[in-house]
Image (cartoon, rainbow, N blue to C red; front, side, top):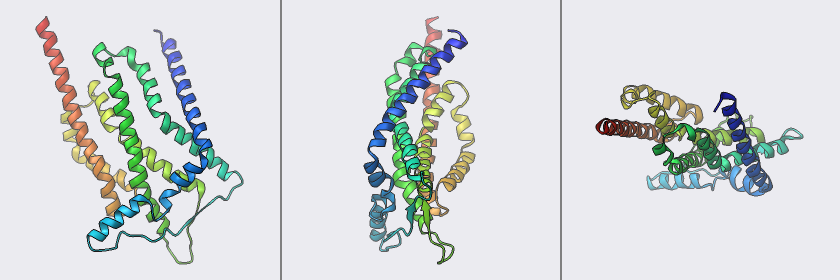
Length: 268
């Protein structure tokens, strides 16, 4: 296929993916009450699952330090089109999240002709694992990063006279950024898989730069969480685990490649 032919295939891949996002976004648009009241605004409620879980853990340790009674801020809209705009962009974000497995399938179809027959057999597992990691990251962002951020930033005050009244776009932006960033971060094993297949990354390389990766993880955890040690550690732990899993995956890929190479040499 010519270069322009590849561009044509890519164009239709993007078109179908965009249509899927729009279709799921329309469903999310209709489900406004459920999405905003039950999902987006739920982490603002002190009875949210994460707060209750942290409180129960705190009480078992003999203290109420992690229990909260209220999150002292209100969410407001200060522009005429503020609520409608938040509704539109939130629907698009939900559309992307719900359409993610289909988007991955479209991406797989695009790169499939460049793969060997034995690699094409793993199409289903690739889509399932990639989608699973993405949704797992979304849940981690929603139930861990978002509540910690909202509780800290919503309760933080520089003076008693200054009250926290956050704009709706700021609130939804924080929630979407926390969830989507965590979703993409959890794709690290998939990224390492392809980089290893391409020969750009080796287990030795990952081990050698493990300490630098740890520093990067702590910096990233500090950026996407409130500036307290507990929150940063909670967020950093799964990132470190993902990095170690990526090393194992890289080892497995190289071992499989070596076995395939030795088998081909034996046949010759």
